[in-house]
Amino acid sequence: RNNNDMMALAETVAGAPELYYSIIGIISILTICYIFYPAYKCKKGGLGCTETILAGDNKSSGGDNELLSLIIPAYNEEERLPIMLDETLVYLNKDRESLTHLFDAAVGNNHQRRNKSLIKYEIIVVDDGSSDNTCNVVRKYAATLNSGDTVKLISMHQNVGKGGAVKTGMLRSLGQLCLMIDADGATDITDGLPKLLKEMHTLNDNKERHDTSLPPKSVVFGSRAHLENESSASRSKVRTFLMHAFHFFVKALCSPRIKDTQCGFKLFTRNAAISLFTNLHLRRWAFDTELVVIAERLQVSVSEVGVIWHEIDGSKLDGGKLSLALVSLGMLRDMLCVRACYFFRIWKMYSK
Image 1 (cartoon, rainbow, N blue to C red):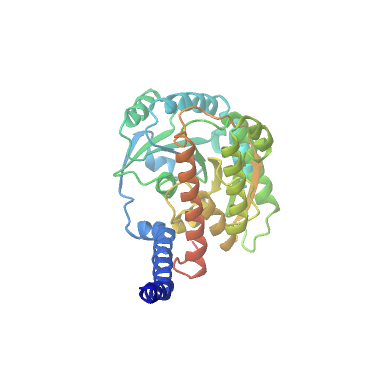
Image 2: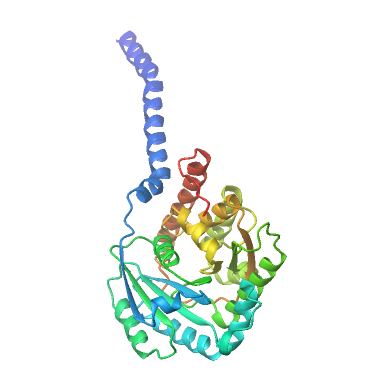
């Protein structure tokens, strides 16, 4: 009996490595599938949408392109969007003259404007498959607008994620400068927009271009990096740990140049917007990190400016510690996917 037990034990031990190798193989395959899932999703398309011009004239706006486009991705934002639109539209109208001068300097318009005309705005709200009253909120504001500016509502046929919504809005915009701005109004536009326009002027003014007849490719990131110490004091240890971990992986996997990739306040020149968003693949929260990678590969000038930012109630990430951890894990997965897809040339880079 003892001999039989010993033989059975020996057979079990001998077969254990094969079991371990099988388990490791299955885990490896599942990990690879998980990492490359975003690449599979973007191959399926799914960016179908319906565009409606609610105010203004699309043709006249696209004439000389002396237009500032604001792209606002929105998903179930019926409560926060009205507050943001109120503050934004009041400021844009009130400071239109000063913003015109900053806009001209940023894009290098040295000529005198005809009839002392002022800048026009193109406000694009991209409804990312909302199930609430977001679309009607936009229609309501467009009906009250009498400034001659353009308001567009782009309705995605399904929820595609913030990255997909911003990409759709950017590629359908007409402005010489394009501002990405979150629907919650967390970034103070009265502080942020002048800062980004001034930095865009500095960036383009210092940039050496072989062909000065071509518009520059430049991006200015609004940044909350200067607020990290303050926010760490008010955040939980879990949130602070995840924040620092995310920054570490951004530096390691994407680029050390930008301290805060996730602030929803970014200014693009027209050429930069076309080049970056034509090549963008990621559609969820981590799409900003891919923008940095694409910008470096296409030699798009990138700068970062500190802005005033306040945390607004109702964030899509306020789902508890487990939800936040899962989102963070998903963003890490997306960054690994970006690194792998460009390294193995699964994703091609097109220069526009």
